[in-house]
Image 1 (spheres, rainbow, N blue to C red):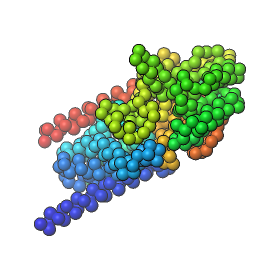
Image 2: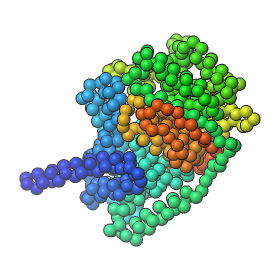
Image 3: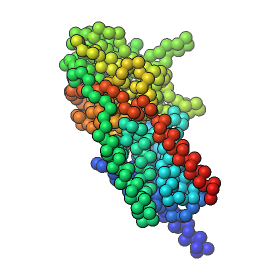
Image 4: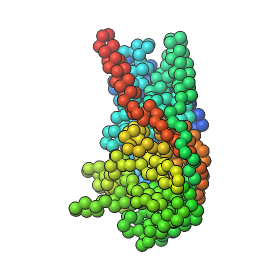
Length: 507
């Protein structure tokens, strides 16, 4: 009886430790050199999860849930702000929603951790664990339209494995993080093999950073990125909307530039209901000053039965028809309502929360300059920046070579939290994967210009109203990841997992 109580207490302490280590892992991502710090923290997690020689599936699953809950509760707590502070949902219900989302994400971590239940081979266990993690992270990006936020890959922008991204994408960074963090736990058992793996992996990836696949093209663009800093709670207040329209219009027309960008839904009314003459005036400004202007608006698409709304980037260029890009990867509950969940969104009380999807094959935006070749920009709107495989596929299949990335975002939904910094790291990873510079125009931050290596060239402070004026150099060329996508790393992961299962059957 005493032994059983002691075992239960020990298990409870272990689960609590895993929960806090998961939270520490999430916190580490926000620190300078966070990608380096996460690796030893992960090693502690693997060490605690592998104390049994062959752990039971039940114990391993629960351990993975504890670690995952700690990780996602801390990493995604900002969703509480959108539900409670902006949406007006009851605090208890908002906390429950965040917990349920964290639990749903933790299920993926638990599933990947089950590979530790296989009999352990000194040379194979870490590779199988990394392969399982890659496959589960890929599933996390596609199941129920996907929610791959808070993966290990984006933290690697400040870690040792970022140079792998142009070759095999963020999932390759994830593979290396999991594998090498496991090998650290094995140093005492097999110091020669594990230390060789660790040193070789870090050295080879760092050497890969000397390869470049894209090069500058043409003269730099003059760019103005407008940050309005309007509170989300005022989004549907008529007087506040009028002030918002006035600010963005005046900011656009105050100075010319090759490219002027507003944030997502800077003009938060359906395009057909915008003030009379507004778009005509901005088009005239574009023509008179040779400025290309990108506006965040609510688009409209008409079919035989109803008008559907879209989250749209509307482009105005001198001497050219207007351009439009409609967001294709929508946010569940915020921009589309999954079947059976209308009651949830009604409680959230957000107008226009069921948008139509844009096509996946939309053309890039042509930035026209007098006497110079047009620059082609691939646009993403907010959440779409999370999906590196989709962006790479769009660039690869584009009818015109893409030279620049543009992300238009409104993170006012999430207040003063780590969400803007998390999305900035995702944008940095997208630049690394594609070898292209990026421009980020946001409502409350982080508005920034990124180089083709993902490094911040210039940025505005968060929660300030202003304009970031920069020069950005466009690039041409394609990285291996843009050509191959996730196929190589997913194929390797499948082969390693199959090998692990075959070896397990032979025992």
